[in-house]
Amino acid sequence: MIRGLLFDLDGVLIDSLPSIHACINYALSRLGRAAIGTAEARPLIGPPLAHSARALLETEDPQQVARFLELFRERYSARFLEETRPMAGMRELIPALADRWPLAVATNKPTAFARPLLERLGVLERFQAVCGQPLEGRPSDKAAVIARALAEAGLAAGGDVRGLWMIGDRSTDVLGAAAHGIPTIGALHGMGSRAELQEAGARWLIQDLNALPELLARLELE
Image 1: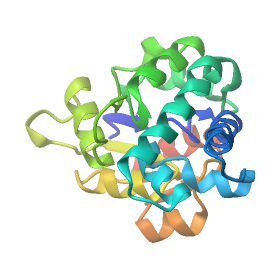
Image 2: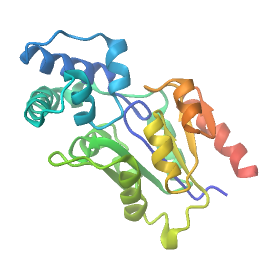
Image 3: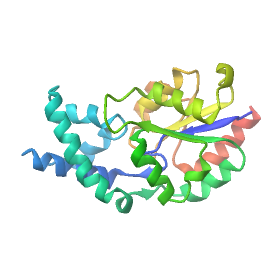
């Protein structure tokens, strides 16, 4: 039996690629760096932004990384609500799932951005927990974010994770959930590739959110 569902946010529930791509290029431009294309930006979405900044800037210099984050958030905080769109079927899917099972969000996006986005899209109240990264300080790994979501949503009392599933689009989602013994449904409409998700150990793959109800119905019969 399914007992609860955890969702990643970027690339799974929301299409944030256009906004994040624009903000990356804004920060790069202000730092005198060349802009990158959409294909280059796509794999940077999912891990904590500081990790992506270090890869983009090819540096471990904390001051350069901090400046990139500052510039990125300068634009993002002003534009993210208007530029982010729900993934196809999300607005219909989440209420239907929430009527059956507890739902939670575990994301590497800062919670300060994740909650307003879900509220703007009309589904915030459908989640028992929305857990992300802090705006300041060192980001935690995805397993730690998932642990907070499980605790906040009351989904793993006594360490029992049976019947819980993660829906994610990057290897970090799969590996973070696996650290708790939770299997992952890989979302191919997101930022990660089929190969990435399969190599990380995703148990099932779906083409998009509209395919999720049918898969969940099958899982309930197993």
